Image 1 (cartoon, rainbow, N blue to C red):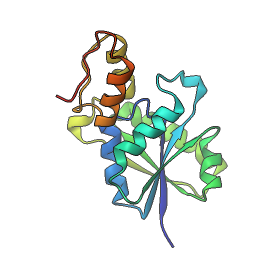
Image 2: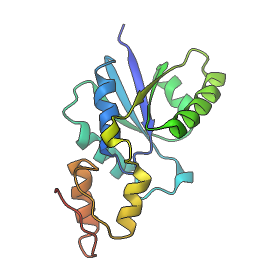
Image 3: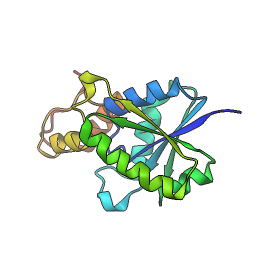
Image 4: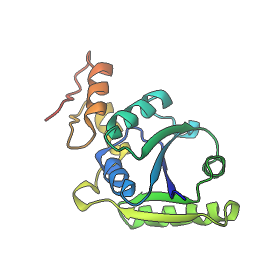
Length: 169
């Protein structure tokens, strides 16, 4: 029986920190579903379709990974896909405390659920989607040290008429 896990997030945008977790989780499971959340309450910078496409393009070299978009509760998505393992990346103790709280809530609805926390590698632990969006909004430089090439290319397309310095440095 294949062991399947889900790595959920809004991925707005997907970062090299996310990729670090995805690559490492793909080695632990037969199949990893990267679940891109619609999450209307987060007022995302990129559309769901853009976030799915960016994530797919960024992990296309990982044969055992699949990207899916979803709306609604994560627990419903897990049940629909018969998955009982959740992968979460943590950068620091704040992330851990937040994720542990969420996990306790998930367990109420899915008692068989297990979670695997993977700590982001130190050199990537400062990267967050929120930070990337702030840099973009304020016209800062984004390059492939922070995000995958697919994100850099989309940013170049979306912001070609303003002063944002985006590129593969």
